[in-house]
Image (cartoon, rainbow, N blue to C red):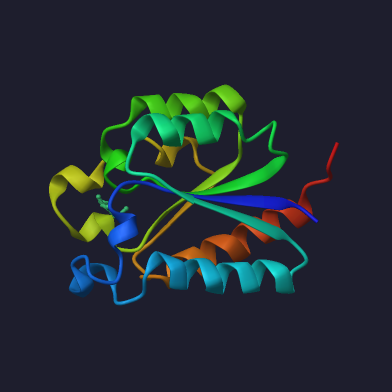
Length: 150
Ligand code: DQA
């Protein structure tokens, strides 16, 4: 059993009503419920976190080793395009993670096409709406199950 942490950045608490044409109709709570079930079916545990504050996201990442987290699924939201601090936190704890987005950031405004995370992520999943989370979880589980624990 591994613990997988799902970390969500700013404005993702607004899912459901936030630009539904781009982000879909599901709330973050709906996504969390689906992911918990999926993790459980595969014998893993999920911890789920959202914050609008950069320092809270940085602190959550910093704590991930103490919290015995095996893998992070990260939707940095707008911090994708701005946050050196969050990038540095992931490097500081040397935590494997998948970067994910609901929308296809490459098909949107130019400023969304640069990410501070993609080059240090195990992989990037974007453009599948709430399914991006499920795909990222399945990818993380397959990576965890391939990697012998020390
Ligand atoms: C997002 C894409 C970001 O560009 C945006 O700032 C978000 C959500 C996504 O999931 O599609 O807040 O990360």
